[in-house]
View 1: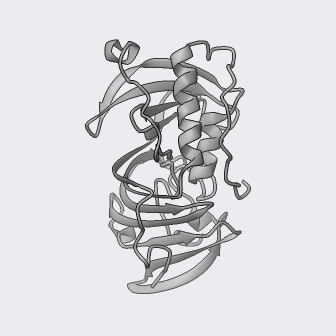
View 2 (view 1 turned 90 degrees about the vertical axis):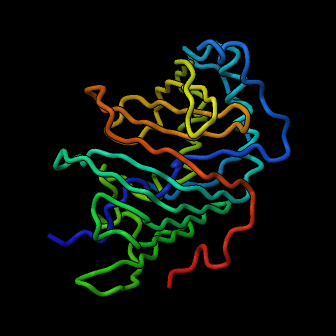
Length: 257
């Protein structure tokens, strides 16, 4: 058995998921909120069609704003805090990742902290093709290697790959017109009042029965994503903090040294 290079809870986003409200009038968060394996392609702005349970006009309005905001996205950077249950061992793992994204698919992740100390400092860069570049420590030495995006060593604790958890793929999941969506209530995440949306989506990743997306209505941006398995057990969570939307990225953001 090959020794894993990566044990990253979420190499993509969004974060990951991962929307933006650049230059757009914010959506009101009053009223009800107050009381309550293929490489992806970038998504165009698209209207939200009501599914069987997407009957709340506030949900439709919020998802439409999310779609419009995503259409204005150019760059996105944030700190991702992840939690996951290893699908093979059942053990729990955590990560803190520095994440950068540039449309249409450029993605970079660097592990800042991890329940597996050996992975700290690992950086992965994916430009949208079938390969990614990884800079990591192996037998005490730092090495830089290109590997297939679906190489077993590139999977996270749930066995998901960077193209599957990328921003475009996350948006496909959240904005799929046939989704069943319910407004579950409100919560405060990283200081932002957010709407919690329960989502049943045919785009959810393998082994996932349902998801909960927390969306900041002011920015029309997802700030948290939770995945539940067939036993309704929380097996995966990412939370986005220190979010920078459409701001210049470091010149070496997508360079592996």
